[in-house]
Length: 340
Ligand code: A2P
Image 1 (cartoon, rainbow, N blue to C red):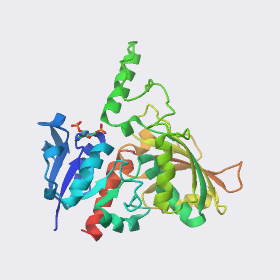
Image 2: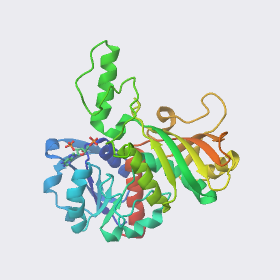
Image 3: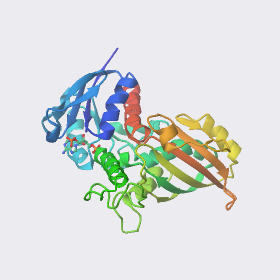
């Protein structure tokens, strides 16, 4: 069997760790796997496929040794190293926002727009969407194909793992301190207390009053669905959950769709699991269904009382897996299958 050497950039991080886990779990046809991170991690080891890999510094890595580069070390790192990797013949799947809005770089959700992948040849780079957009579009694609979506109103409830490994530790530490009647530590990743609290702020504020996380959902939805007419109105909120993002979606479709038809479409949609029973617990949640699982879960499907073509859904997914690492590897699988 043909194998492909893979470099994981950001291998000591929350997403990088999941990438290594998923490469092994899905039996990706890897040859040599390189774990890359900053100089700070020199000498560290990370788990991979029952063994340990020595972490190597990104700055001195020779990308001609790898055929595929899975990047998740922040936008600045991607800006500098992804073009260098691509020039050395290593196709980059980039999990940061660095290249997502560049028109000739494909932005791909494996179940939604795999056809866009062919454009990877333009720069040798494929962008992986933002986690909130990713799970939203896996759920909305079958509905958009059937009746067209005019407008999306979405409120997110996003877990701290989306902000990286330090943010996970910060929630744990703040929680322990507060439960032990100790004062909160000094500032960390979050601008206000995150334990036992909810913050209506993810990423930087923009001139229009939205945050960048909210605008990502606007820009990326249009690009992935190839439809600039779709209106997206998002409020992105950080909640004290470790893994799994939740979203309350309120959509307005071009033609009316009933809840029954939407449920049936979603039941046969790739990457989706429907859990929609009108009883206590008959819906998916981040901690009980989404975390550490591959599917995007949908529940609470109902017709909007206040709009003739409105539909409401509750969507949860593991932001580290489908929202980041898993989709990157699904994209790499498509590259290997059809292009490399
Ligand atoms: P390191 O652990 O050496 O800092 P997370 O998003 O979970 O915080 O993870 C970020 C990942 O990106 C980590 O693996 C981190 O490595 C890596 N990283 C951050 N800055 C750099 C850099 N300048 N060069 C290489 N890797 C980096």
